[in-house]
Image 1 (cartoon, rainbow, N blue to C red):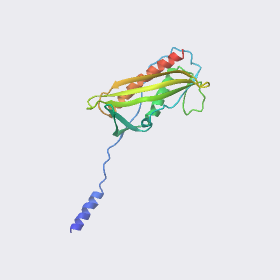
Image 2: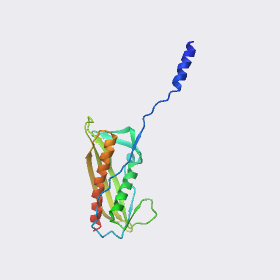
Image 3: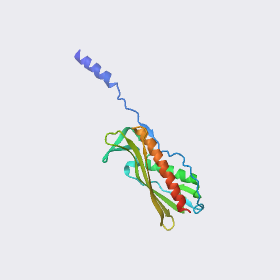
Image 4: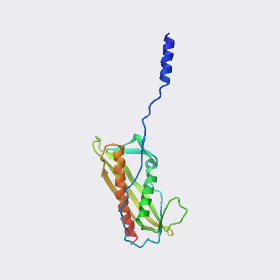
Amino acid sequence: MKYILVLLVVFVFSGCTTVVPPVTEYRVVAKKVDFNTNSKGCEEKILKVTQAFSSSTLMSQQMNYAQGKSKQYSYSQAQWSEPPNISVSAQILKQIRKSNIFKSVLNSKSRGKGDLVLEINIEDFMQYFNEDESKSYAVVTLDFTLVDAKSADTMASDTFSAKVDTVTLDAQGGVEALNEALEKVTKSSLKWLDGVCR
């Protein structure tokens, strides 16, 4: 009788599955940047935007956050819909196209040749918490280098950074703050490109 009871318990519990909490995917989306070009120097130039260089952590869908000065963790129930280095590149390319600074703007996979090449390096793209997790903010820091495609000479380079406090102390709050910070950095980079093309 004991054996039958044990087998019955094993059979019942073997049919139960472990419930895995759903993983929420977030996108990097910078709001539309209102920008009107004043320059004419690049209106006949074709710009090619390379895919952003970054650390390996920004080349995966894993969503990380930092706590204090040296601790880094990953969200277990949140991830990026695509790696940040890909989506950041796409967002910047989209905004440069809308700016009308250049005759045409190509992505890194295009077979077309550009007159100029814009290289992007992501120095920072992360949500930060203080030690007791009572406050949080996001930081976006991007390096831009404009290169002449024929001579490979560097025409100009600059770094832009933005810090935005989060509204909520979670992944969603971090994503919203990162998107806002990216918008600010993108606007600064457009002004910079406009100035270079005067």
